[in-house]
Image (cartoon, rainbow, N blue to C red; front, side, top):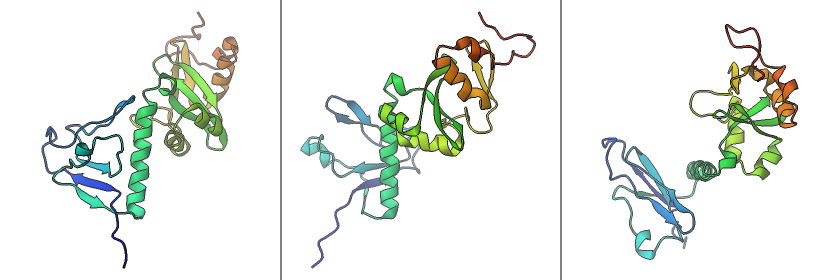
Length: 208
């Protein structure tokens, strides 16, 4: 007799409800880590794992009334991987070291530049293996491989992006980013600034 399949989790869809509905999901709390899995009022669908050993027994039984079990299979496995990646990125985003934009130097070059849009300067330079060891999640590097950068919003650093403002000194073309970052990180700022172009209406790069 075949043993019954055990669901890997429960999925619920709230897309027919108003976006401000508060019935969607609860926070899940991990001792020492805080709230790590949130579904807020704007969430239309959610997946909750069966095995949440950090939840109290009574909490494990609480499920959304709309939740349906999901069983192992390629589609579920893919969704699990996506959700794990998403959660890992949220956790990594809480580490100040990892909040920079990841920009790949070129499609055929194993070099990833960390760029701080807030400070307008390089935050680091790594090979893929070095970036993973530093703590960046592979999904961010995968996006950089595909799109040119890890950005999910406006296309900063994508392959077709023109470039960046560098410390309010001048304009840095995207194809010069890697050389600029390596010089800047080696404390050779004067040489790095040679790679900048003056802002429109100005004749020189601002060096001081």
